Image 1 (spheres, rainbow, N blue to C red):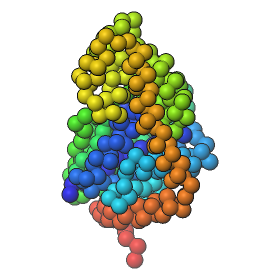
Image 2: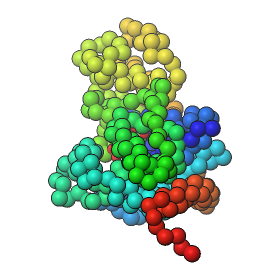
Image 3: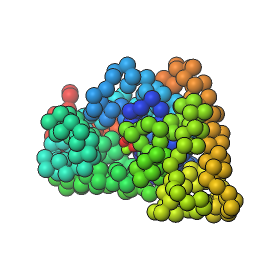
Image 4: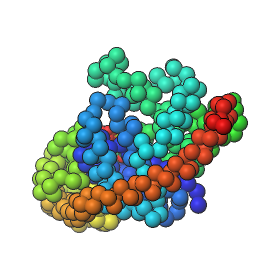
Length: 331
Ligand code: ATP
Ligand code: MG
């Protein structure tokens, strides 16, 4: 089976609805068709100032959310990035193949360092796309599921793989972007032109682990428009279209069917129904996460097995890398 790899950062107390519909839910369907590796990218989470205790907790809570979403440790390799040292080891080699200007062109560094200015940003934030390249290349995956925001990084990954292969010897496979057929892009319920995101958070963000009543209230207060007709039109009616998308993604009902059902009814009905659909989803999800967190030794056992399997694969690639760049093997 072709191999697929993807990661998610443990940068918040909970994942949000966009993370679930745009990533986690897709991961679950990938398990059937591919040999999958999914990891919690804790190394990437220290590129910005962070709290150590929180990071540790969030890492475990992230794993619990992957499992609650349906990622299955029997079929997928689930691991924590920092537990597989080959990632940082390969990253160093790739950093030495990356031009300074090339790294500087990565727009996420520009975006994320924009607030405090470049001087306040860490070197880790600057080199983060190279670590990401290592994350990927070590597993020689055929595909990497990526959102629009990650396209540039995947290009860098491919460039570095090609450079290494031609400078030394063919070692890395050039991964292809895997665009999911129906990846729902979920927008902020208040700032309807922005994607729902962990870093924005706030009253437009549906956290999976929030009290469901809080999420229902957020849905009922979602920004719509000054018309009254429920129509799917992401340009003219981004708020309403986002609500339709969320409903459709969670209930499995076609958008057309939903639109027809709301003919002659107002936004209030739509919001009430979306709120209900969201509550029906997050309630059992959250309960499952809490159940999983009640038995941390079980989670740790899953991670231990995942790290072992991931290390096996990553270490084999790293051995080739070290050999080809000319490092003297330990006798
Ligand atoms: P941050 O604000 O820190 O960038 P984020 O909420 O954007 O956090 P990421 O960790 O960047 O989340 O992304 C994790 C995964 O979730 C990625 O696969 C990304 O494409 C997906 N994702 C994030 N936000 C959305 C969204 N609003 N709709 C659909 N998919 C999303
Ligand atoms: Mg993001």
